[in-house]
Length: 206
Image (cartoon, rainbow, N blue to C red; front, side, top):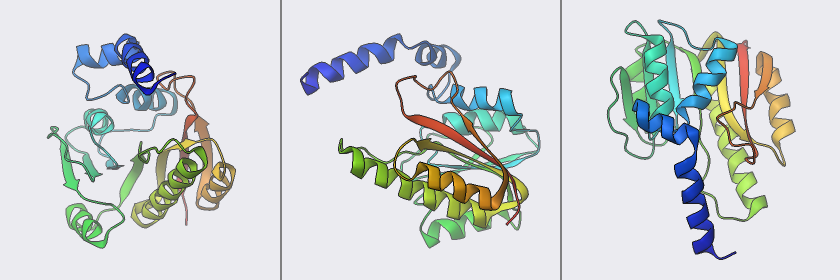
């Protein structure tokens, strides 16, 4: 199948997707908002007053949902390399979360607090070479975990998108070194054909 035909098929499926249509009707930034909503409904992840950090936040679906759930007493800080349109109740920092300058701005924004939840729906730009793409995805996951370890308070949680493949089992084992409970979630809003799952690590202890 040619790239043009593949693109047309993807666009057609995208427009017909129930979660894309629902996001459009309800003013959601993206269909991804419903992945977080479904995980939250199952696991009771977000609560009023929490401090939440959203890595790779653009276009803002997860931050949008989190801001509603933590309410005016909570804090949502979003970071991304790309610009993001403002969202009420969300502090946005543009930059690479792996860079010291971004970490300095985040520390200043937190004002001595630590996060209750670090979450990430990030994925690398795909090249189409499966082995290379998986390696890049795992490297991003490892960076997100390193960030979470440095940002979470005792008992905090980490939610991250992971693609099944080389390195994923080892990553889950590494999470279990720092969190009391590690769960795998595949929300209905995640397309069945996608290799993505969400790893929820709870009760951070080291």
